[in-house]
Image (cartoon, rainbow, N blue to C red; front, side, top):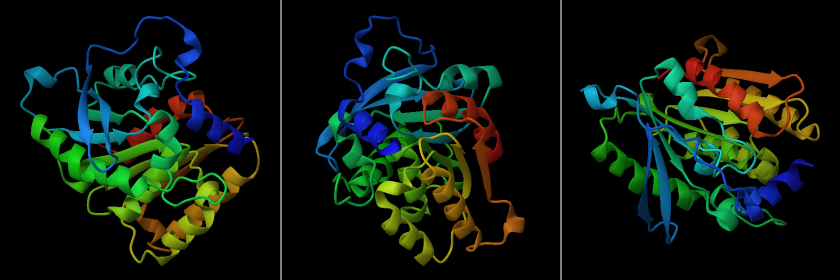
Length: 270
């Protein structure tokens, strides 16, 4: 069931969002811009949230990089409900910038899988992450008042985005110091991602793992438990560098991830 859901989202993720004509729900703190992504041979639309006091402040802020921007801020562009990230951050008066990257529609599976799957293809997350690290992040750090170090750079996503967020910690440990890994689709690259995690000698990043126990089959919980155990072998559990939440009754959908966002952010710190 999870596999069918992932592939459906990857192939038809926008399908012009249920065909509904509705007003945008993104807050005034959210803006968008487009940027060339030579690593992906395309142009990416980027959504940016800044704190409510941004214009009247000289402070610098941590940055959260999120995938699937269509689902982060706006019900009008969301496939099956938004995360309400802007409203949640406004209510917290959170001092953080969020940079959300729109997925590539029919290219989503390619962009958000680190390795090629024999059945489903994909495997271009290296290009996608290179775009974030070498093209997008420098532009964000130049344009906005950011704290650019790894301690203040978070990456977060769900499903394939959860897989890629975890992979980003292994691929760019000098860039991303924290990750929110929600319902990660480890299954699509199971052999490769576990082997890579096993071969990683040091993993110092903070990780918040989240999934539901009703996500379609037993693979999600089993893989999450296995990965958390593997991560714990790389550092002392006493350091409190990772947290795991398995939500009773939680399903593979935006509600699960929306409801878990604030707790994850507060635990990770910003």
